[in-house]
Image (cartoon, rainbow, N blue to C red; front, side, top):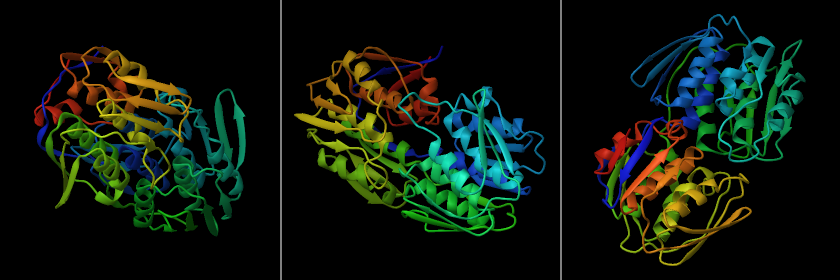
Length: 416
């Protein structure tokens, strides 16, 4: 079993480049199933999650080719319209293939999804959208099957919660539907906009992405397209927090500042300096970390995917911080691991009270999920002594060569 070993106490310095966004590229890869033509995607990160969805569509019959950061997909003929347990159980985003398959072929059978155990993430909103478009949904032996006889029909769909996955899946289904579909209370994340841009490059007619109402005028067919994936805002935010907790001074290449506004605002409240420059950001850690209160919210609020990382930072704050998690009910699993390193965190339901301590100490800990693993790395970078992180496969789902990138910034981190 692989593990990361970190000797902390070194302020980060230098330059690091952010990879393409995991949460953008996964639905875009699923969307390549909407056409029989070849699609070329640039800026594709080499992540476990990306490999899993590429393996899944290859299993179904798509032809794929991967060279450095470029992925090509040709789904000319698919001999299977089913995503089996072996593929889907490893990654929740696999469920995103249902919308494209239903739109293009009129049927899909997908195993109930897996993923990080960070809380309940029901697929009922996905299925509600498909039903509104005219699909018949059945459940059998752990599988969801959707069928439509005479093609999907455009309609109005109101989401009870602005779910990112449901918005994406419904968009992909509706792009080939007959007539106009309006998704109300849609998710507004940048990854939604990136998917819409890709669908439009294929010949789709999607408007309003990035707002609460997304409109999709159905077309009869889509063509192949070239697309460059947006930078990963969560990876960028993770390096920003790492610089802050170590008192470092780093420049982060390949970021879209607009996507990071809530993270920038909170880091500046802690005393960090964030400077725009070119295609990136310079982050200078504070001499003294100030406590802040954080509440996670759907975009454009503070992202739930950055909650664990900023929790690590606030363990070193000069005072008490309150963190409220409103998106997932089980996303404080990292708190117990941080406590092994000397953190003072009290979790009560969806709220964590973090009392800053003078220092953290290295310990043997385990990554309980993707972002929790990143939080432990951040803590290890600031801790005295040696930190050993097990179950790093969680971290590899969302961070490309994280130990190499941090090493380039001067961190003492090794994969064993």
